[in-house]
Amino acid sequence: MRSGKTVGNPNVAYGETCLPIGIRSRFVDNSNGLVMHVLEAGEQGRPCVLLLHGFPELAFSWRKVMLPLAAAGYHVIAPDQRGYGRTTGGDARYDGDVGLSRMTNLVRDTVGLVSALGYGSVMSVIGHDFGSPVAAWCALLRPDIFRSVVLLSAPFAGPPAAPPPRIDLQEELAALHPPRKHYQWYYSTHGANRDMQHCPQGIDAFLRDYYFIKSADWKQNQPFPLKSWTAEELAKLPKYYVMDLDKGMAETVAAEVPATPNFAGCSWLPADGLHVYGSEFMRTGFQGGLQWYRCLTDPSFLAELATYSGLTIDVPSCFIGGRSDWGVYQSPGALESMASTACTQFEGTHLIDGAGHWVQQEQPAAVTALIEQFLARKR
Image 1 (cartoon, rainbow, N blue to C red):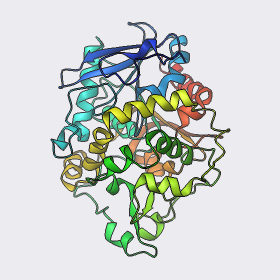
Image 2 (tube, rainbow, N blue to C red; image 1 turned 90 degrees about the vertical axis):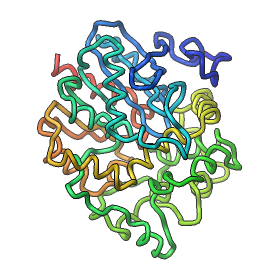
Image 3 (tube, helix red, strand yellow; image 1 turned 180 degrees about the vertical axis):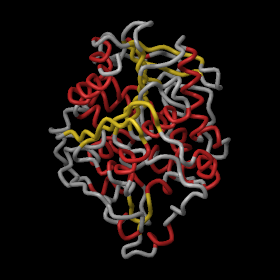
Image 4 (cartoon, rainbow, N blue to C red; image 1 turned 45 degrees about the vertical axis):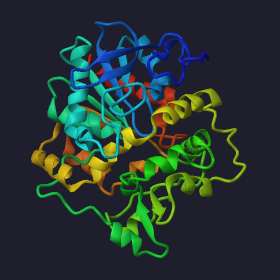
């Protein structure tokens, strides 16, 4: 990557500073209240592929797959999503309008971006982590626009039942010995942003530990399916998913990662790449992304999604995950439901060796090959 002075400046597209040559950076008004910062590779008019990042990431997380996909003949677009990076116009205040980050509005963001780019539809929407359910809902609600979908790291089990099931187990988790809490509910608290953005070890060190501990380089990651959505089963997840009750996330990962860890194997995220994340989240904070979790854990927004109970994804779909990723199994039964009921044209689950949660960064060649094979069958 090239280095330069514009990393961290929200008004400057950073295509000339920290990206591989051939990836461009610009701003696009999505007509849904946002001016979206997007990275792109390939030429306008080719079949368009849209890449949606997760938390705590940016469009930058797709840099390793964008150029190969462009070389295969696609126009590749990766935006900083609502609340992230250099995209502006959202409400990232804890006391602001959290409803702007509800799932249906995130879909509207994406539909608006596609239109602003000059396309009536895209060949595929591809989402990782929290970008995976956004991609899934895009394909479910607007199959005319999103003609196929690839989900990474987070399986999609379909819309919630009507009425939605009870999923808040915080009291039961707190009653365990030792007492625990689920990270999604922690991310919904007022103090989560402060705990991470201003943690004692510094934001670069926190993010380094967080990315490392969820990767295949942390050898303790040996995931397996959970039996049910119960406190006892969820407590089998690593502490970066089901945390000690009295700890924040920065404190959690600092306690789990050794004081002098061996990051030599973590070659997929060198210091200059880590600094892009650190400088951006230091500038913006994490609250923009945390708003999404607040919608996820709020029963009223879950009830809104239950309106679509019974609908299925009827465009071609597939799932890609890391074999060392607990995220594949963190929602018991979701992997199986995705393949059997939620997606009617499901083309397979692919678990990649040597990858944890950050699969497109840890093993970009394998991910790119699978995406290219999937897309080639749609041309």
